[in-house]
Image 1 (cartoon, rainbow over the protein chains, first blue to last red):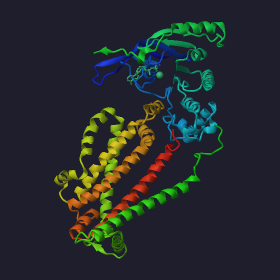
Image 2 (image 1 turned 45 degrees about the vertical axis):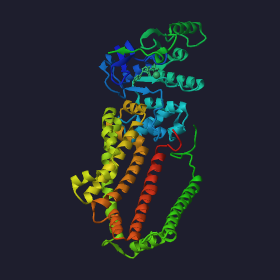
Image 3 (image 1 turned 180 degrees about the horizontal axis):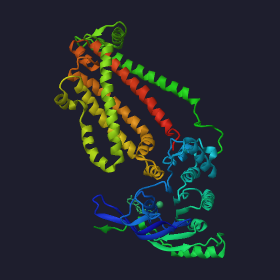
Image 4 (image 1 turned 60 degrees about the vertical axis):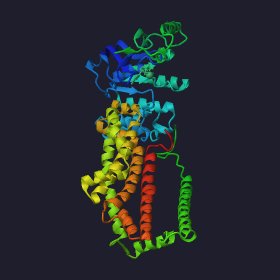
Length: 263
Length: 285
Ligand SMILES: Nc1ncnc2c1ncn2[C@@H]1O[C@H](COP(=O)(O)OP(=O)(O)O)[C@@H](O)[C@H]1O
Ligand SMILES: [Mg+2]
């Protein structure tokens, strides 16, 4: 089943206060995400990956084109589409458990049931010991695990993850990547995972989508069969990595020379 | 991770607390003593060294004696006890300030949340902010005439401006990612307001109420001095001054200082501390 359909989406932001100049961030992007896929969006920074995720989440709306979720047009955020943000997004005055319970605010479970669901989610990410701590006592990796636990509690069909572990050290990142992979295998959800790290994408994805530098366009897609070995030293992985790296835009000059259009 | 501590047991700096409280108290008392000393030296210089005038400059001692008479011996001032004056001023202040708090928090939240509303609305607010409290007098008199209502109008307008600006900037400081996270989790508008925006901006809101309260209290006294309220601390000061009862004026001023300090240092400082603690801001985020 097609979960997300992106049809000819263009997104531009005004770059002047008089609204007579704009900058195209996404240029006529069309993509389709199927059920139970693990999609990695790869591309240089500033190419519009976060913007695309924001459009799917419903935080913003496209300048042209449409985004559909299960056949209906996306107009606003919804707990059906969970997001793990690049920045820390916990409520600082709530302890970890309450933060996870907040993700259930639109469900009609009783408070006890919410407690149970939240605790189970925290156990899955190995944080049940920290349930009563405030976020400020947690390390960066733990904060992002709470963010993952929120989605586990919400249990959306679509997970949107925006470079969730890119600010963490290599070791922690790899560990959390594996945790996400496990969750994906057990829960059979669809995950759209943004990263600028090709190795990370090769480890996780069933499909890799490569974006051009700004304005973002889809350069190429690669499907990775489930039968293929994920061992980074295997010859097929090395070959695929070379293919992707070669196709990757050389410089991320989006932030250096913005493209302006006069209107 | 793996902490054995139970719910809400942050690393309490418990042993430090009493010591630091004692320190602040001692510093505060020291500050008060210095204030009194400056007052005493000034009065002594004025009265005994310069031997300037016909009128004596009230010294601390005689002021506090008269204050004692007002407070404990039922001595009246302009036909009212000191308590009548206090109650009149405080109730005017409370009523106008409460109204300003409700209106200010509501408008401030709207301004803070809707960026377009803010950029338009902040213009008149900035203009109002430039108007010194007593300059509202002509408007107050046109609207309410002489008396208590004019004083309350001035208090209201002065503190509501402070509160709107403080609350709006507090709401605007809420990180967009937090608002997005809440919406993504299905929070309704009401939940977003009460469970995310308000708690996040709590410290700023309490601070703006505290500043607003201070401005309200100061302008209340000034307003009572000019709009002829009949009873009230500000009114008592002008009238005793006109009757050349300077010691009486000074006693009223002391009462005003004590009430203002109590409200600020005790009530609002505690509220602010509580808000900071609730937000886990003491430990940093
Ligand atoms: N709200 C906005 N207003 C103006 N420009 C924006 C806004 N959001 C993003 N941009 C611009 O769009 C470009 C793409 O941003 P983003 O989607 O965050 O890139 P990525 O996540 O791929 O690094 C950036 O150059 C950024 O400056
Ligand atoms: Mg990004």
